[in-house]
Structure formats: structure tokens, C-alpha cells
Amino acid sequence: MRCKNLVSIADLEREDIDELFALTAEMKEAGKKDATDICLAGKTLGMIFEKSSMRTRVSFEVAMTQMGGHAIYLTKHDINLGERESIKDVSKVLSRFVDCIAIRTYDHETVTALAENSSVPVINALSDYTHPCQALTDLYTIKEKIGSLDNVKVAYVGDGNNVARSLAYLCAKLKVSYAVSSPVNYELSAEFLEALENNVNGKDSYIKLIGDPRDAVKDADIIYTDTWISMGEEEEAETRRKDFQDFQVNSELISYAKNGVFVMHCLPAHRGEEITDDVIDGVNSIVYDQAENRLHVQKALLKLLINK
Ligand code: CP
Ligand code: NVA
Picture 1: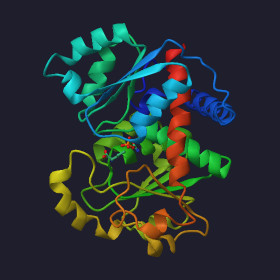
Picture 2: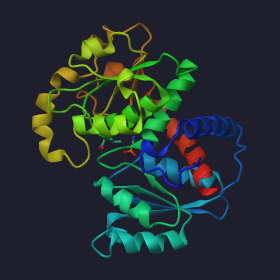
Picture 3: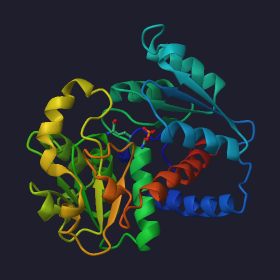
């Protein structure tokens, strides 16, 4: 992997993603046989979490343990980033202690500032802008389930948020068709699409915004959704629940898709809001395999970034 950090999918070239996916498959296989290489013995991951997390925090920590290393969990109360001391000083000092830093925060600029000042790799564990570890896991999971990413069509139904953005970047890089259906005012923004076009030439052949979710899912192999109310948007909850009511992934929407369409969700799910119980628990759902793959993908990512 040529990049030092994973701040966003924009940092990765196609070859990096192929390398990551190949190593993920190897590490997943080794993990099943309890034969994980102790390749990060003596290494430490510093994990700064300014927002809640279950999957990301646990999968990173378990990944380090399984590879013989260690992870330190630092909450807002521990280091009080930017208030007790500057992001620059935290980054400069923390990177003298640890071998890699993962950060989950609000402003994407906090991640970029940390990365700019760090002497060790920085991984974005979710910002308001993007969630690259999730997107990598999602496309890895799709490849694993379908066997290839050739001609795959993903339909994302819901908020044009951090998860939708990182998926857009990764789909464009991997030439996977990605239809996004969001309520008016919640679409991927023109500014975002322009930035994407500047990073990935010809993204227009892959990324489509489609108003009606029934049209978006028609030819899809994957239907993907995420919460209507992301962390930090709690004050908008009431308005958002009204605005998104026609964008629920339920059995009626699934009936417009192909038989055997896979349903994905990054989790945590808000059952009865963006997805119904029968769909998330039903035969189309692959959400728990998707969640498990966070561990395997991040093991490969840590190994590639730390053991350069
Ligand atoms: N999908 C995901 O990142 O989950 P957590 O918020 O629990 O980490
Ligand atoms: N869009 C969600 C993703 C959670 C993993 C959020 O930012 O809260």
C-alpha cells in the first residue's frame, strides 16, 4: 500500500485496494484456522474515539490483539482533543508513542490535521464526511458474496451521508455501478460529486442519483441503507424521520428488486426506521457477515500500513 494514511478512499489507488482485498482473504482464512501471523507483536494502535462505536472500536482492538499487538482506547474525556491541547501537539506526541492512530470524530478536518502532524499512519475510523474502513469492508463483502465486482450494481437508499460518500468513492474507483436514492435536500451534493470527479475520472459512468428508490433498486444486486440520523444529527431527528419515510428498506421495496438481491447495512440499524425487522432478519440480509468482515479488512489494513 503506497499511502501513509487512510484518511479517505481518495488516498487509495486501485492496486492498493486489490492488495488489501487479497491480504484480507488470506488473513480471514488464517484466522479461521487460528493461524494468524503475529506480525504486529510489540506494536500499538492508539484509538481516539470522540463518538460512540461498537464495531469499529472492537474490531480494531481485536485485530491488534490477534496480530500480537495492543490497542489503547482514548475517549474525548481522556485526551480532550483540541481543548486540553492542540490537535497538532496530540498528534506529534502520540505518534512518538504508538505505531498507528485510528480516529473517530466529527469534523473531517480533525482527521486531516492529525494525519498531517503524525509521524505514524492515521486511519479515519469515521468522520462526519466519510467512513472509509466501512466502504472497504462493504466492497470486500460484495466481492466475497458474488465472486467478482464485475457488472455489480449497488443501490444505496437513504441519506447522502459519510457512508454514502465513501461508498461512492470506492465504487467509482472499482468501476462498480452505484445508484443513490435520497430524499430532496439529502442527496450527495454537487460539490461532493465534483470532488469525486476530480479524483476519479469518468465517475459519471458509475454514479447515478435516482429520486425514486423503486427505480434505484430495479436492477440492483445489492440494496444498502444506513441510519436516517447520523451521530451528531440528533437534534434533527424529528424532521428527518418525516423526510425519509418513503425511503425505508422494507419488503415492498425489495419486491421491486431482483430475486436474491443482497441487503446490506453498516449498522447500527434503527429497526422500523430505515430498515424493517423482516428485511434485516430475512434471507436477503448479509449484514452480520458484512459486520464480521470489518475485523478481517482492518487486520489487513493495519498490517499493510504499520509493517511497511
Ligand atoms: N458500522 C460502524 O462503524 O459501527 P460502529 O459505529 O458500531 O463502530
Ligand atoms: N452514518 C452513521 C454511520 C454509523 C456507523 C453515523 O455517522 O452515525
